[in-house]
Image 1: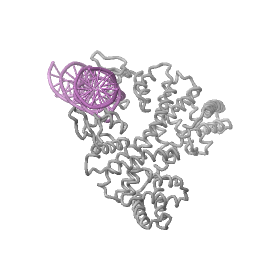
Image 2: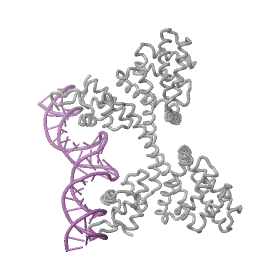
Image 3: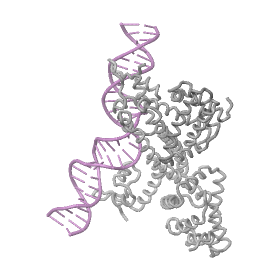
Image 4: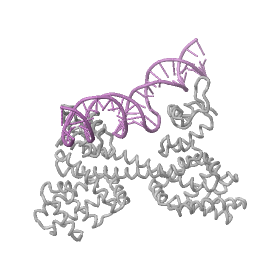
Length: 254
Length: 254
DNA sequence: GTATACCTTTACGCAACGTCAAGGTCAATC
DNA sequence: GATTGACCTTGACGTTGCGTAAAGGTATAC
């Protein structure tokens, strides 16, 4: 059986242009060229094309594929292992990206109702950026990728009701926190209620709540100036107050 | 504070070329141009650049970023949600890729010892390709992505010992199968032992063994000609024989 | 004989810069 | 005041894997 570019293209599910390109870069040459200049492919080329497409589906670059399919003694398995490493790295990055985007969505939506949108537009970006860069890494190192990924799952599966609940909780946290702050005692009932609400809010984003993580996050609120700025915006000292309340709430020693 | 291209680049961790490019595409124009033609950036540009880089880290294209940061009433949250969908799709594809690559590695390595490498080089590719294309899809549809992904986990965590065990098992399967075939009865002890070994081999790739899946796979060995060709290579009829043995082994009705 | 479906080569376009190249500018040092 | 070295400018080509015309020749069916 002999094929012209289009026929072979249809057979393999690729365009004629692709075949011409493969010819151009010496990846797949036609078996012969007809008197009128047509590219004619035979069975051997069909087979080879299948190999090429197989590797291409794995995301390997054409140059590497060329080495794999032309080099007679080339170690295909080694190439695959190397490629696998690259893919795993890529996925790690992608997971991080998704985490960031999802948290960004949650945070912006959750906080849009809490504060003046316009005013915070620029600030929010920076806050979230730093939050994610620093805090995302720390959490991942501490609790492993799995925890984070499960957390992503949770976010992904959030319904509209969940979202409303999160927003409501976020508002309640700020309100309660503000009230407790006027009181002044992080051990007071109202401050502990704020800490508890904060925990509830948190569990919407973390699949596994732990006292240590909660306390750690509270400390981060103080250490990271932009985070701190967010909480302190209405009342300076609120970030520290929340941290103290959470410390007491979680029974975490200072 | 005022910055030239390189200074701002250092501050933000990007190249001067990138800044010139952003100028060129009207994504970030300098505050002013000095008498000698130097680009001079101010605080507003620094802030804007941070926004740009934030979105860029999320993998959003520069054109979209332009819309986000220039459009005054642009719905950033909506853009993020859409972008999230894209990322999730991307990750799905990537997971599939990784699955394929890993299975390919396992299969090629596992079978390299079973047969003449040279001879099968081209054939293997086709077999695996079809196997993956057809069978990967079916399994995914039937058992869901999670099963497959957990299976990936398993493969990812394979140690050298695991690998040797897999290779050993693969050899044992073929040897036992060949012996059983000479016997001729798929219900015989030896044939059932082959089916059992095959199951053991399988569980290295599937996290959740099920009789249905095992039987289904056995049937596929017969239906798919290339798969069939692989098993039948030494002894025609072996694929059917294995299927019959597995059917009996799993108690699956014909 | 002609319609039309196919083939050819040539070449620009895409995303986001990296990387020379050729030449002007700034600040400090001799 | 001249030189030096670090910096700046624009221009333009290269990267990857093709898509998409454009301009023109060919095979096949009616």
